[in-house]
Image (cartoon, rainbow, N blue to C red):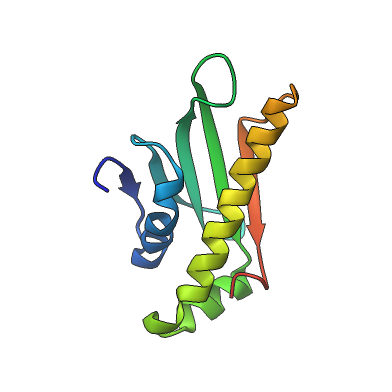
Length: 121
């Protein structure tokens, strides 16, 4: 998995990045940034080959509600698998939705935000 770049200050945010890394091509960059309210967000930068006639830079921001992130962080490591599965499924669905938009000839946004709350943790 070292074909990816992880720039996350928090170990738990990097762990979330590693959970979804298999959904993205090599050379994808996973970074942690603070939202306006200070909550860490996972920002994924990748080059999409299936979103147009040429390679296209895309950004997906995974924004987890502060209360949900706090619940996740309070969970023992052995109990985080449900959150991992939810994150993986939602990111996969988001990418699939973008690919469907492109297939229909619709314009796909370069920047997408995935908001997670109760469903995450």
